[in-house]
Length: 206
Image (cartoon, rainbow, N blue to C red; front, side, top):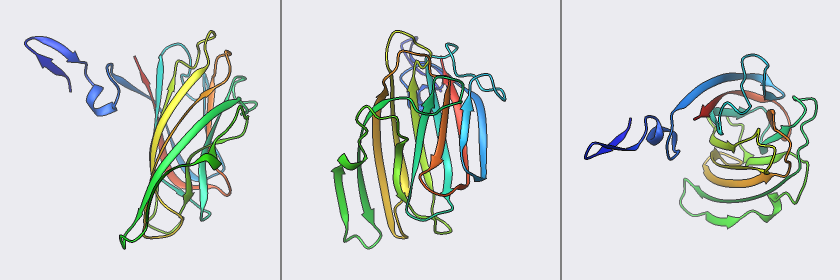
């Protein structure tokens, strides 16, 4: 879908649905979890493209469900084709949660989840419930990962059923991968236990 005013295209096809300012999204790869310890997208493997073909990559997470209760959904990056997921990063996160009873609600900054020039996995969202009908949905943007001049910025937002039934949580996270080397692989996992089920879709944006 595009936006045209007086014969001038203001937004190109795909812009409104993807949440990006301009450009079309191209589906590169879809992974489906089935009691998976990790889910990885490695440039050049299994049809994955994570190079200078696109200036932005978007990952969509659909119905991500952990096997273990009260765990965090995380990511890390690699500059060596997935041999090591340990890129140094600095990050920030804030969130809001609200319960079904309407008597517990918070909006705040999550200083405890900050990474300060750390190689650790970063939380996309926290304290996910593994109850039967609970899940996580999220979007993750990675900008110009193959650039060898600048650090690599990322942003995202996630929704999850928090900790136990009856709570909803919305997270906003951002940061940068503190490397001028090309980033050529991304891995997602739970902080403990496997990803029970769920789908991750990887898109490139021109």
